[in-house]
Image (cartoon, rainbow, N blue to C red):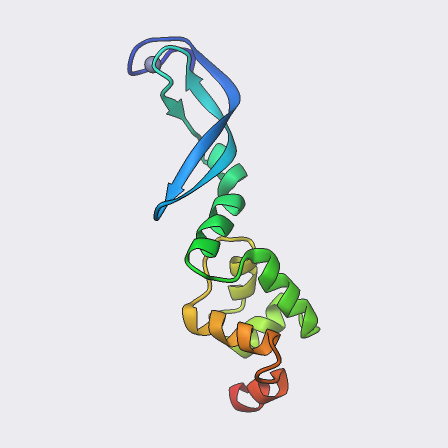
Length: 133
Ligand SMILES: [Zn+2]
């Protein structure tokens, strides 16, 4: 794209500080993409959006009180299981934990609660395995 489809202004590929809003909360993200120098309209490709996806998803998870991708990974590693083993125990399909940890999908609330209870040693992973498998 060289000219803006809205105002015919000049388009430039650059990285801009963008304020992202979610439920009364805001975050500043560095968003790469094509921007019109005249009307400031942004044209973001799937690749551009992918570059901020993890950051935005984790921001939303924090707002909604869900474990972030890093927290999920930390808890899973604490249990000494890989993504596939975690998915086998907790369900959701073989790639479930891969999806949760890469922010492709957010884990369900019951799973989030369960992982928090395991993390705080309120219930043991052995107890979970006993009833899950
Ligand atoms: Zn424009």
